[in-house]
Image 1 (cartoon, one colour):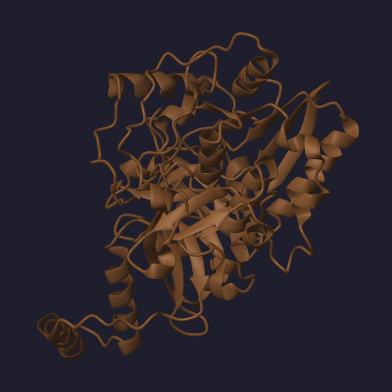
Image 2 (image 1 turned 90 degrees about the vertical axis):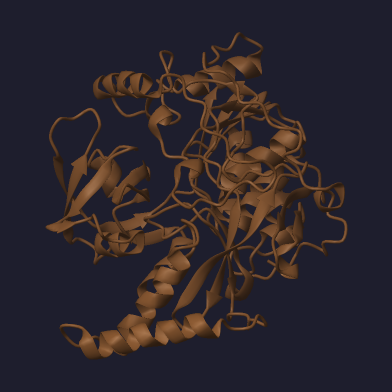
Length: 490
């Protein structure tokens, strides 16, 4: 896999303050061989001319054409977008684990910005923003009428500048006004600790360029403290995704060498790829020299594992969970994941602008399509002992307007039992409950993961398990990587 910007894969890191996406960088846009629709282009030209001559005030050509490109791309699906100079710069910075903003993963709902999840330890997290909050105003500007990209730009700014958000929250009768100071967000990719003798917790909050190297350091630190490790909990809850090499490297740390980790399939020949547990698929010359996984103890390949996931686990984290589940390397525990199973390619239009375009779907080693479905845990366990908390209110891929459908099965209506009544019950509970600290003493799901590793009873969710459909696969040739090249081009 190339370490250059030209082909650096990203899974799940959207507009960084924004929605989960799956991306790879390419140096320039590919030239289309398709014939141009002349009649439609004539109409576009006429509308352009009418605006220039008849609109109430003069409009710059660049603004009109840029907005036309932006609207055309944004109309496709929630993850395709035009990236201007600022957005493109922020996207690249985000892969390095830092950016200036509020620190929230967001989407759009009914014309408002919806908080998918605040990033841990960010200004938004400290200000008390919650998953499911609707942002209705940014300072004095109504959000209604803005695109997601426009809203994200307004939330961006210089460090130490303030922005006032007006929040609508389901359990509150009145709007909530919150003033937040923008800061450089440094997302700590990997955290770890020995929970008790013999058992450790390893959390990947987001997949970044340094994630594989950081993970190796954390695992070695765990073994230095606890040489006789009996069980490991890999925590991917609320992990929105990130760079593809990070997902491959984290998976490869626990799986046999050279096995398929993930495959992609789309219209272009280059989109039909299989990625394997090989050094060139998860290293970058800017970060690593040699194979970072070679520094891991051999025991890490066999230590019993539980992987914790929830509705906030998206894209790259779904790749890891799916691979470990397919090879039966770990028990997946928690709640059904976000369902972000499409790949976006960054096509540069100029030195500092680009288009982020959905170009493929991705699949687990057994050929399961994740798009608009997600990973169904082996053991369904709620966020708390008395229910699934805010996780039950979180937005999923299938809830997004114009989301890409799963190509192996028709979209099904979400299986929700007495949805309104359940949401009201959860909202009432959350109003009284303090925010959950992953890895803390009150982490119910982590406690259940430890119980499973010790062979003790696990308190399962009362919600029915969603069964995976047998037809939700791609053909065996694609599943096994046959005819898909070496899988090392992205």
